[in-house]
Image (cartoon, rainbow, N blue to C red; front, side, top):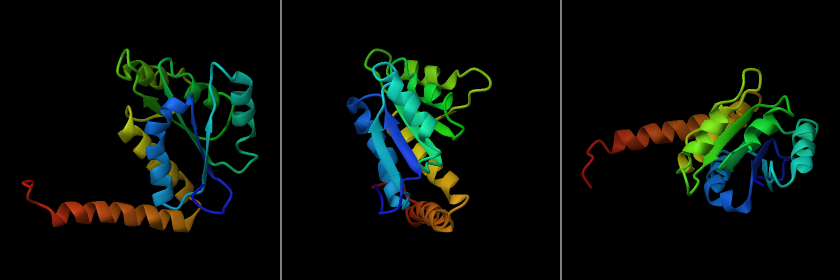
Length: 166
């Protein structure tokens, strides 16, 4: 967890093998000072746990859920069907189809069950952490300030290095 504060973002994944991607969401949350929890919650192997986790998330103080999944990638959509919280889905690259299957599964939600879908892999997980922090920052001035500082730092890095040659 990023601090001693209760978690406000849940970072979940379908299996432990998704961690090398999802750790990038956690790294961004830590950088921005957002309290979080992490957990393996499988849509296919532990559906009862998935429903309990999603249904109880808001009551436990979570404000956003970041869900990473590969293959059929049902986790983000199933979580979204069980909670009023915003859910951001991160497609995890699969061996067979390089994550395209995951991306399409997460993006093609039926109308009425919203999942914000990010890019496949590390970039998607990083941006999911950033987006979750931005949502938290709507009500938390310190997190908003941290997001603004991060963005200013990115801008300054580009301005300080205009020559692309090493």
